[in-house]
Image (cartoon, rainbow, N blue to C red; front, side, top):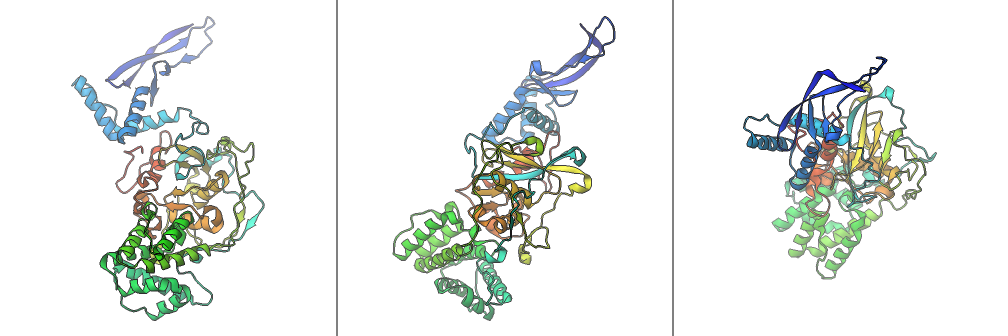
Length: 518
């Protein structure tokens, strides 16, 4: 038996039509013995209300209406709040406004967090398991280390030790060679880069470039480079060639520009041009720069010269990692799916670990790179100083096309390249084709140094939001790709905005905010 508490609890309830001022009372137990002190609080569940605080609630229809509008028109939080206020005022000009944007943002994420969705079974119906496109980011979850007992995802558990044979400067267009002084190679790379940036040439190769070219660039490609450096090209071809050469002079691997999965198409196109045929493959779907320079070369009667250059590039890329050890085949370990351990990745239907992680011996004095890139491409990442504060972070993977969460792991230390590498390698049966991350330039180097055979066909991109702050080459800037992959502007911000945790919506710098859930 219960009686009504005499102290009322007022709150504002927001619906699709109008805000409603409500008053509820607690029910206390009316026990004959008078010893029971139990009270029943009003939860709102029976009326489909969700409380953000004891004074503010909104119906479930508010959350679902916002989701439908985001899907239909990519509506922002502030636009939704303004439209709801308009609806309220159109019904009653004296009506109170809809809740403030910051309040609605917090309500929405808490409401989402209470849905108790099992992402392992509620899989993305379009991309399914083993997704080809993934985007990831880390976020603060405000859990003290002292309350955590987790196994770091990056901890080696196979007993195997690997010493990589190749590093950054073995994979670039002009690699270091034993028979050539490193300074000559750097000068040659810098010479090409400067000419590509200026779209003009001094006319003759300088002595340093001659030495490097004689040793590093075979006859199959010297004709094209000499033609480019001489400036003796039609203007459109000169500009298109400069765009393409600028990619090749980056410190990134050549395969970041021309992934091996497209090599058969590139070879077929080069052979077709050499034999006097026509282009039948649209290279702009994966490399707009290659598509432009190839089209201009054919149009300006320089197709055979550029086709020979492409043949050299393909031979060079195939010789970078001929003896690389293949990644261990997927071998799911039953019973290793355990979200309570702090790791839960849903790339497979079972969620178990599919590979054990070796220990990698790579000597480096840098926190950001295994090999330091050139000065003008040296990017840094501001790691969260979580260990000093004693609070943990969570790293999450998403489908950048549909926003589906593909799992998470809790980090006891600062977010780093180890988190993305270890989670993808241990839990994905097949590597993704495209990865979006805010430090993709260094992540690409990290992955290729450790498991080049596994990640050899994976391209890694900065999302547009983070890419503008990076100094690295254009090979990892997703804004350069216009068609054929994924929408680059919804990659890492999807993780940063949409999943920053119940009650903790992250505010980002540079004038950006949490106004867009997508």
